[in-house]
Amino acid sequence: MANVIIHNLEVRLHVEGDDGAVFTRLFNRHIQAWSRLYEDECARAKHAESERRLGDGEDR
Image (tube, rainbow, N blue to C red; front, side, top):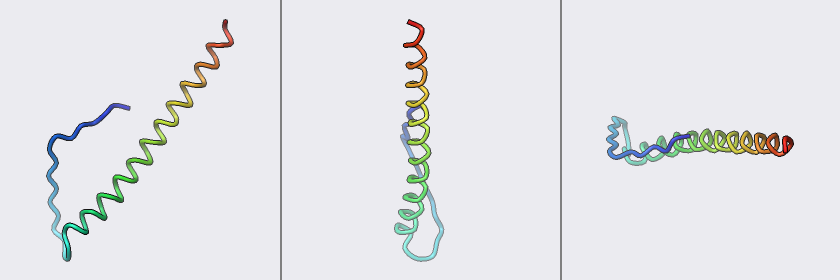
């Protein structure tokens, strides 16, 4: 999975109450979901790589 670098991010929210608290809650929820997906993808890639290595060892 490729690395992503965000150079500039602007977010505008129109909510009732504390804008900062709402943004923080929503950001945390979505970044945690993204992180779980990213970790799952990394684990699948690592598992696939280890499976390929096992196959390579049997041919020798």
